[in-house]
Length: 451
Image (cartoon, rainbow, N blue to C red; front, top):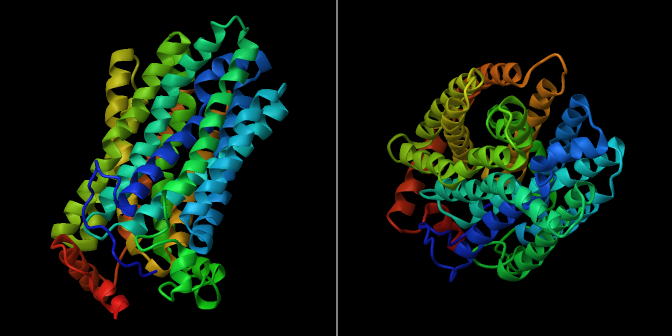
């Protein structure tokens, strides 16, 4: 997809341009999605007692919360190409708010499982965020833009761990019991999700020059049909081995982050005998690293590209993944609280930098099938979380053992990054596009489109 007038700078404190409005609205929308998606996670100690859930049943709900997202992410990327990211985000946020507010009606394991399954669909918001910033920003800053919007969105995983126990405590002060308290607490993120969906529709547009409907009417963008249709786009992405290499890589970084978001609070609650609020605060530190860690991954991706082109981006991805696996294995061995927190922060740093590095590569795999590529790779993150979830549902396997095995898997997955190759022609074209964008000039693609 050839989009003109992409921004070659990130003006962080500006909302004047459509590029920066999309930047800020997309990370905020993804951030809010975490309130709904993982809002129940820091309250699981209370839910466990209320619904009398076993460790296996809790593990099944964790798997359910990320499993459905695999399928929805595959579809949402294609939907972005069809109707545009603006409408796709609005529909996802508004419809996704419903099961978040209605989870409070669950009164047994089965209904709670179905509610978490339905809520998991809003995790597809990540693909829209990455798609929207990819069509708004030029090659010299797209890695940083993608990483920052995704990172500040993922930050919601940390703030949710901290804020939801406080929301729960505030509701308890009204005199309700714990069984009703967690149910009422989940109404709060549901309302925020719905309001954000409406705001996204009115404050953003699909591309720098307008919405997709307008661009197609003016002949500046092909209609999503025939050779530009959803089936062709998905087929092209499916046949590319590089897409599946990134699928595995993202499974081993974002999939791990989703898993930690689900188990961290109850892990610290059980293993270090902490109260619910303290366990949630410590667990929230993992997600709060997204304030800068994923952005660093994107910045380093752009820096490696400056000196090594697309090969540099791939090289940095491999390094970040390998370090993540080593740090995770170390975290699994910690027996004291202070050391566990310290190594968790190191592990979190490399996990999120690897995520930023992954989507520093994604925009260059196949520009004509960007939505499909982003959807498949994004689905990999949730597929990884599903696979990891099985490690933590077994009564015979401790959380620490599961984390160690997960670290070994991440190290092995890091070598998949080395399968990502580009033709000499693409390498040369992207090097030229990077230099032109960095110099503030029109890229060759934009020049051709203008003529």
